[in-house]
Length: 369
Ligand SMILES: Nc1nc2c(c(=O)[nH]1)N[C@H]1C(S)=C(S)[C@@H](COP(=O)(O)O)O[C@H]1N2
Ligand SMILES: [Mo]
Image (cartoon, rainbow, N blue to C red):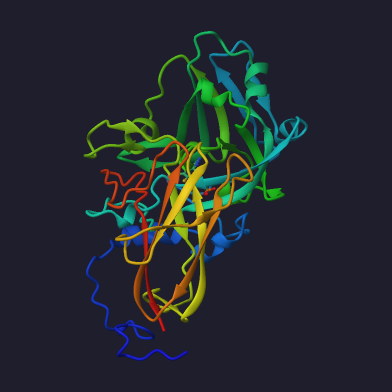
């Protein structure tokens, strides 16, 4: 395959001519180097291989002294519990395959761009999480009748929005009592790695990542609404940073395509050999199966249906594929998922002041040679 300059693709092999039109701040780069996305080609694996699952860490990975570590369950309960990691591991265990996505996925594609962790696409991963049922532990602690929410607090501390805080989030009591909510100590058969929440994290399938509190230290039953920073300020859909808006909860419907062909090193523009090409990717939505994925070769002007593989589990992404007979030319490939409740990805950005839930359709520039 040869690529020449007259193929309306001047940047292949030499990015030195790119004019940086939309500069990122050094603070965004700093966050991007700490918190990585999954390389999109790794969407080919049903379970994201070790080290490729995205990570998002607001502050620092805390140091944990396992012999001294305890999980406490308190607040509006009749029986406080203090559990060691061994106590937890002796309880009945279950393994769930769960797709996790950060609510900020797609943030850096928003115009204007909210300044935070600058995700483009790929703040997502699927893992097998092993742990024990949260509801069984809550029942043992004899939840008081006035309890409304369950607050999960991590061992990591930092400043955000000018406030010193522990990373903590709550779930409504009925959500915390669901059968599929677990306290997990293993990921893909190995102890949860430091960056993913060692020694214990919450897994609440269907919710965006921020609810799955890592490095758990305490669980408290509340008889009131939790109004901490991560609940009432950070993870909101709002039109200004000051507005209260709506809480961010379950994952919005999204599909992602594995970029076909081979990339240009710098621009990541794809070069595809003419002929049959199988386009494929993944699609997911908080608590709904995917009903369809449509593919566009012309930037969203016309759409055709892809084949969607049925769900093999209630909490994991689905595969889709589309057979393309590629003819030389320039293309913009897009994919657009619709879930079983009828929610579809928007073709225009879903803009919010903090860049939450921007599930607009992906666009991949491709040159067929
Ligand atoms: N204690 C604690 N839990 C946390 C976070 C954090 O910074 N501290 N980040 C949250 C966010 S925003 C996301 S998207 C997920 C990321 O989980 P992962 O790094 O294992 O993919 O963890 C969540 N749990
Ligand atoms: Mo996140």
